[in-house]
Image 1: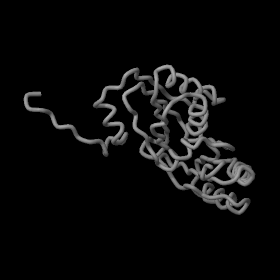
Image 2 (image 1 turned 90 degrees about the vertical axis):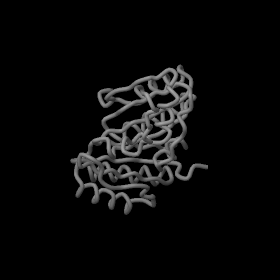
Image 3 (image 1 turned 45 degrees about the vertical axis):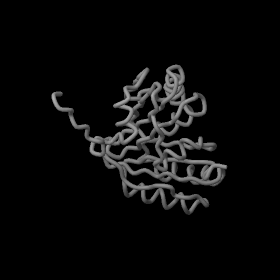
Image 4 (image 1 turned 120 degrees about the vertical axis):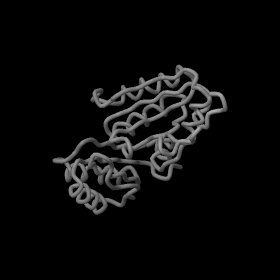
Length: 201
């Protein structure tokens, strides 16, 4: 059984409204605040989990309370385990097969699309990056066979009503081993492992 059967995320452009909204959601239903706080560009994110009924009630309250500052939101009543784990910071190896990367303007959109992608395509969700150090953007990285990572991108696009929220995407048919090693270590440039040039290079 998943630790949290349902997840919801509300993304706001006001920090005071974000704190107020999170408080209202907690008082509305017995949910858990998984993460909440500010990200780049001054956005405020509220990620909650719990039973389907409780999260749905809290989500409705949050949407009403934060409507004037709402940027995006998503309610996932049966969230994929891979998406839940990735939200908690878990990462997987990208392996040596194909890789696809998709970048979106909001965190809610990447969660909604990733849930659809892992449920409909035979891929590994390598990583979700949720706004921090991305200027408020978000990315998802998938690995697997070429046709499967391509399907993951197609499912991601189909899951969203507003296609303009997708900023860019790419497919790498056979990822270079050195690049795979870098991605496995970290997708943050500041955390990347520095490779020393061999003598004569």
